[in-house]
Picture 1 (spheres, rainbow, N blue to C red):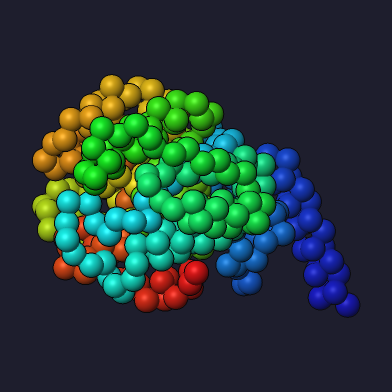
Picture 2: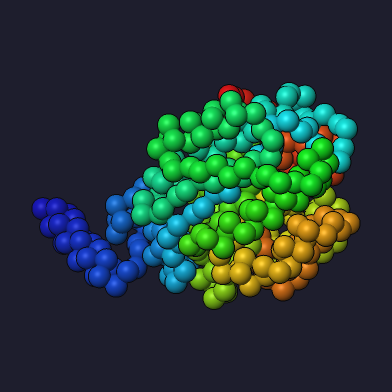
Length: 329
């Protein structure tokens, strides 16, 4: 009898404590079950609340002061060119269009997953294309709209040397930066040979909100864990994301996420990169990373489908074949 009364008393105190924690925004962890009674979540569920609080088991929660309201996904496409300035085949040795289509498939899947977790976010696709057949563009736009997302197509025209792949690429990059100034919040610039994991965009936005709230500033964030950066001896800071770790880096290629504020802050430097070719091409972007924080995921959230022998290619500890097969056209 005493045991029953003791259990009832314990349950009553627990309920009161849960109500108090809800009022003040604290979370509790039931050590015996690893459940979170305040938010009614179980171990394995997403604990963090987008735009409100970032919670990682074993560390303190962080109040989100930088809420993401909108995401513009700008995909630069060209289904007819294998590799710019190279005469090599990509991993899996398919036609270039196949990489573009799988990139779009992976992004729509990841965007649907993002929408489930960030319910209030506004999402829009922009396809900036160079010389792809109309049938390919229609296929891309239909895929995005069929999944319930808004999409627009911006063709890159009036290129002085349309036969020069680099000239076309630079024109596409310039157009993407000019278009970014019309966006409202976050912009994700994507090349059409990056195939994403389903959880990629959500992981990137969870990290973006958390890290901006920690540092009180905007950042750059990548979806790829570039292998060539492991051959350098630069120090990295390691931070905890929602389900993965992130490290600071000083270099990347041209697939990255940042805010409109950052684009406006470094606009002239970015436009110069897309106008005057440097070696490496991303030299200006790397100069920006000397001033701003840039984070890369561990392990990679996307695969860069370049030549298998390229230093920019295979991210370590990543199942390339599975990600490729999961996004079959």
